[in-house]
Length: 460
Image (cartoon, rainbow, N blue to C red; front, top):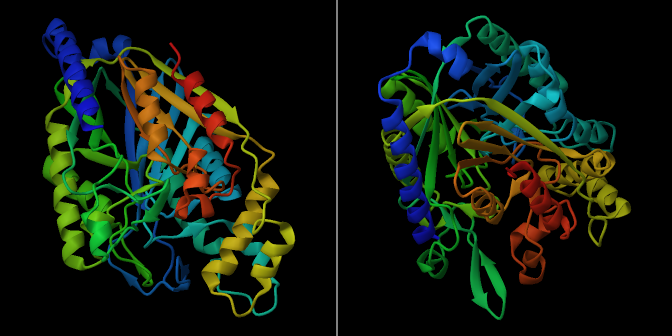
């Protein structure tokens, strides 16, 4: 995979460099009105109140190590607005994801299907699925769950931040692309055991055999997209595929190592930075993380170095037009053994079950109730850059596929949109075993629907 990545990087650098040479000097703001559009950044505190039941232990939040952030850009071109938003939460599922899209769209004066909302997926952050939480409200001996009020304050702050950003849109005329390899951060969680079966190397790992196993299939590159006016970068968006966990299970709010790297680079550069988690469903830091604070510090430093190098490698070209495309995708819910209604309700009602297990059962039921409504896959195209927005915990294979479908473009992928379907895997994972198939809420045949959607989004 790295050989392919280096070849692609060399091609992109040569092509982008040729275009930059042709453009010569920095374009003026006036030319930006014709060649680009307008952009504004937003950021706000998304930390729920202390005492909020906190995923995955569902103990009450008691420590704010770092405040959680909601960050993104409003992009305006040809009288239309689009919003790219990423939140330092674990997941937004089903009705909650829809609620965020609708609220942001109203604040930006656009349509919900022109808004892409993602989570970074830290596990020291909220899991939001209020429909599931309501199901648990009246069961005997209910587990602790967040209330709607715990999430309404952060969402109101996000709406206000987007609305305020729309009042200070400024011209951009160039789009920048860069990438750099992240050393000793990501590793594939599915470690081959022989006979077509796999073991599980989790986000933190202390088993020598699993630690010593190769990284496996990953996308080793941080990819960075920069909106700029002339030589002035206005916003950088970073994309990298890995679960963003170091240590967790305690009731602590933390942006973990990707958020730490993002905020450090923003302070260094004085330029707005956002970080989107790519298709990291089967990718984590387990090979390089034993769950200690020292390991997290190393992950932070190495990811920061890669993000810094990716930003430094940026090559600019004229921005060109903006094109937004959406594809509705229906994914069938699982109803096999362990996922039938009676079994899920029994888990919900079990007073001896852990809060996380009871809540997970309710979340599957919430997904099954809304699965008839298609998910929205979308793609933003700006010049030679494609940014793909996907739901769920997508396997890295889908990100690598997206890059091959438009080899002459710079393709960045954000997953962890609507996480109602949970893990979305290649069909072969089911026969191989491992964790990911057990945690998927959709049928194994979903792979073909995802492939078809990517083909449609990246055509042309």
